[in-house]
Length: 136
Image 1: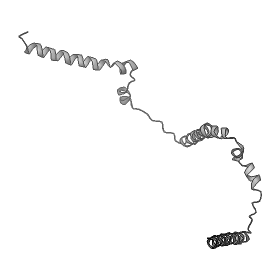
Image 2 (image 1 turned 120 degrees about the vertical axis):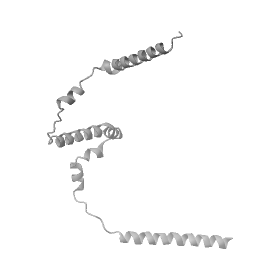
Image 3 (image 1 turned 135 degrees about the horizontal axis):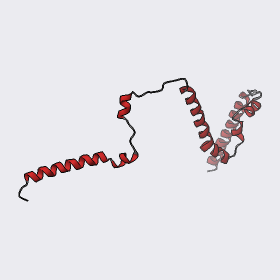
């Protein structure tokens, strides 16, 4: 058994040595260090610099409400600017205007015309029934 344990230890030592050689070779290859210039100044001067320093609570407030309001405002400005170039004003001719006279809300709810039509139809049916059924 000691022979087996020795072989296992040799194998582990060989593996760790191999890992060290491989990592040192990779480190030697990676000598490039990019020069990023004044990116810190550029980022701090941009409109997104506030986002970097905001707390979690401020970020959720901004994402939930402020950004939405800002986007809606921008969308409204863009649409008003776009549609301001069109001068189309629809006109309704007099005969169409007579057909579409405004109706009060009570008439829409109660609909007296329908009630009168139904009542007249009911009376007509009753009259026909009275003439035909003389045995009552």
